[in-house]
Image 1 (cartoon, one colour):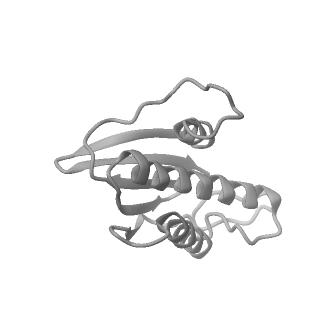
Image 2: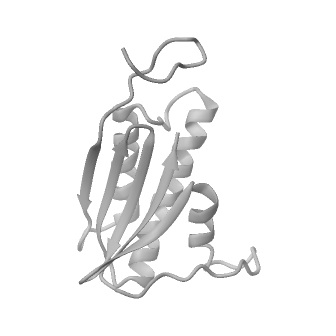
Length: 149
């Protein structure tokens, strides 16, 4: 088997590129559906499992799920509605992206009063992911976040 060694000295198989898409156009509870879909993919791919007893893996999974929640919620609030969630696993790199209907680029606001609701979504994405960005499309954009294992 080829792949990185784990702490126990065993070799861990590194998966090839895999992509999952979830259509969210017009569905009810898109944030909850996106979280459930992402959690299932993470567990199946053994990238991070929110139900594990390993606190590091649990934290990694919760970070991804929180970022997915923020991306989908922002697309609903500021992007004219979320159309699709995409999850891509390529080796040890995971990328999640929410596609919406608005071509305008998101704005990363300077953190304000942390006790006031709203305006913190992209700050959460920036802090929890290894990289984030936006890809423009003719009919909207995808805001994505990358996580490296």
